[in-house]
Amino acid sequence: MDAKELHDALGPLASLYEDENTREIIVDGPDKVYVFSEGELVDETKVRFDSSEEIRSIIDSVLHLGGVELDEQDNTIAEIRLTDGARFNAAIPPTAVNGPCLTIRKFPARKLTWENLIKWKSLTTEIHEFMQATMQAGKNVLVSGGPASGKTTLANMFA
Image (cartoon, rainbow, N blue to C red; front, side, top):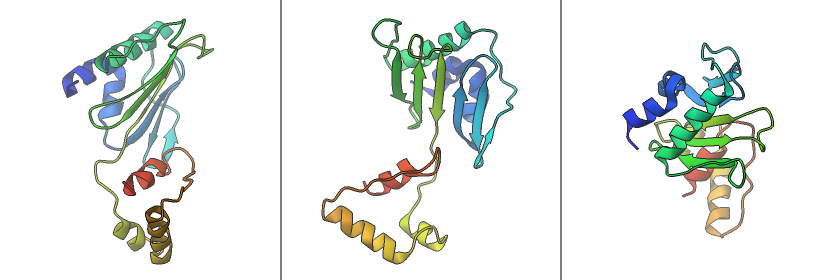
């Protein structure tokens, strides 16, 4: 899938998706479009849909780019990775009881480093050393936190 195909498939969500400050887009109904941007949930976006069918059309268009299809019988939930690494999740009835819904989770373009986390005082040198030793010893680490708090980013730093 190329950028133009994705832009076209996203329809009215394209401008939200292409905003570099957007971290997550949540569509929970025709008039329930939310954006997580710059550390805050923006619950009033200008994007609205005429119907649930329009949301379903966007879901089908984006999933088609990833070779995935949904149906009301067996496959009511899907997740694909977009070309930039963003996660696209969708659910349709009967799983989604109030109609089709979707989320798109984007990741920052710049990579976070251990040095930056220490410099910004998000992490101490001692905790970094402990985490490295834990991973090198093959131990499991549970990473938890709220939406867009950096769980995946932190887990990817160990890769």
